[in-house]
Image (cartoon, rainbow, N blue to C red; front, side):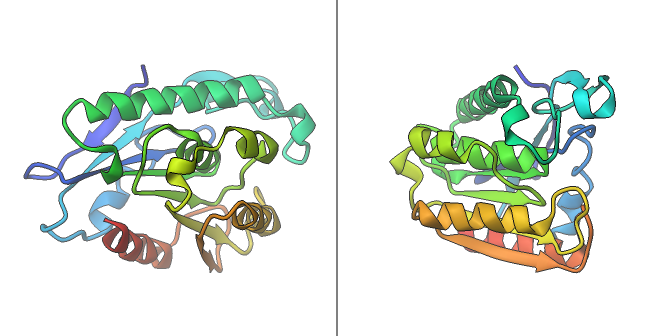
Length: 218
């Protein structure tokens, strides 16, 4: 069970956004973005920001930090922590199922994530066995594309996907994100692509685009 930070509207929510943080952060990382979205009262959304488990990170000399999976080499998928990645996918799937117990239908869930969290959001959203409203993938790319091709579930073939990336990102070069978009489109998914003059971060312009996308999808 994942612990999380939650932000609830003043009235009963009509949708839920589960937002996954990046490497070394925690569920509080994107908490402050919610008021910046300036969402209308007519769209009351529950936001859930789970904390990733703590684990040693190879590329950071084994330091213990919150992460959805270990990273040994940013440029080599051969060293990918497949077990950790898929374990996190299962945990996020479990969180969605737990959230649904409140009566929120799966079709009213957005799965969002930044960096590592975006990778987990993409893979979970495209393999889960229930229909979701959309996936928001920020400053990330998708590893394990070959596994996705085998595991993906047709129920979300037409899911709304938003990808955002900084053109000066030194952590995840935009070319890697663009390749992910290309692979997703090859598999028949429609991807709304947005790029910004920024590094590995979130910009005010991006927040405005996220707001517009949420209003469109929900």
